[in-house]
Length: 237
Image 1 (cartoon, one colour):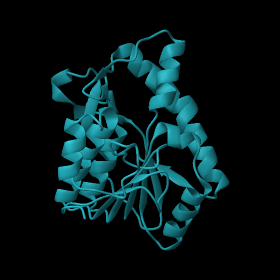
Image 2 (cartoon, one colour; image 1 turned 180 degrees about the vertical axis):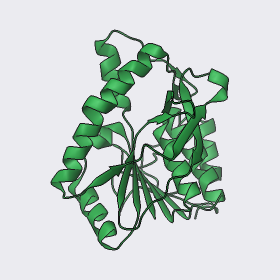
Image 3 (cartoon, one colour; image 1 turned 45 degrees about the vertical axis):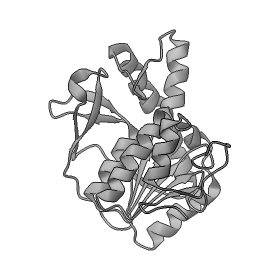
């Protein structure tokens, strides 16, 4: 099983080779879960509505007005665009809406931000599934769940062999702004302490290494499936 998280910026410029790889996996009867973000488009919509963008510990603080904008962006911009791009590549995605439940994160510290509470859905081989950052709670309230965390939750739950983070950058950058081919927890901690890695990437790496410790075999970050930064649990050479 493959889990692919694609960020908002990368979503707007999906490489043809990414689509071809999805086609290949599905032809080989692989199950593929595609988790999409929406950050940049939500930021643009908030600016247009003259609403502030507030981040707390790298996560978007989501009040009622922000959530309303998010819902509109995902439903009227992100999903139609993704469905169109995948359709042009003759890919037929199934949206994951049932069998995935979120709960409020950290007692509301981040507003209507959630985290995955349970996954009970069943996935079939040779199918492409899509889920975005809006997930319902048990009472039916929509919550903003960080797409990285959704991807990690699915990878852990289904014991995916590979988790890819597709971004608009070539990989994790070192102090000299060079792409690192490999990254271990020790080196990552150094980059974090030196604030070379901050914000969303900070959260992504923390969660990713935890996922590897829980059994996800391979995690890679970059613009496509071939290049980028591979996370390793051992010491780097």
